[in-house]
Image (spheres, one colour):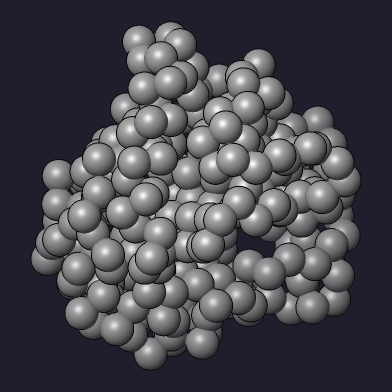
Length: 267
């Protein structure tokens, strides 16, 4: 069993953030039929779905139907969003965890910080009894201090940044602060041949076209392990490429070139 499977329900996004690696694949929204096929193939391999690789999941026109289908089939749905479209899920109580990337905010999207956060705070109030909320500040945005000020005032708390990464704000509501990471890229100058990773051991990723990848950071589908619409998970796990990668991680070695250019696990 995997701890989680990252599932990209769309690679379309409503923003154009500087820190994002950007989508280079054909834009696509997963269909309901495709979604059901994937869930049926995953039912014995995980209980936790993470709508997150590239793209903005709340942009999907059937986002609530996808959440509810997964919930009805026994999956726990976790979503990572930039927060701009949060009203699209304001009444859905079938979300296990909602990660909101507050570092996505920018005035270039023609929305004030007050309006952006008000929409988020309002929806969080309706969801927090059923959903874990994680406010994320993972990029050194120029609005970081302002955002924290808003959080302090709204929740009547006093977050003083120190060495901690996580702060409890309210029941089921947390703030996670982390350093910006460098996306793994074959063009990165730094190379590390050694290291372990949770990929393949604890999780895999599935791109919107069905391509199975080791993790959520292989957003370009460079390490193709198979295709969920053509292969069963067990066949993918028994493939030579999959086994070689897994053995490498167990031996503290990075087999794939993309992994050699990745520093996320060190972060």
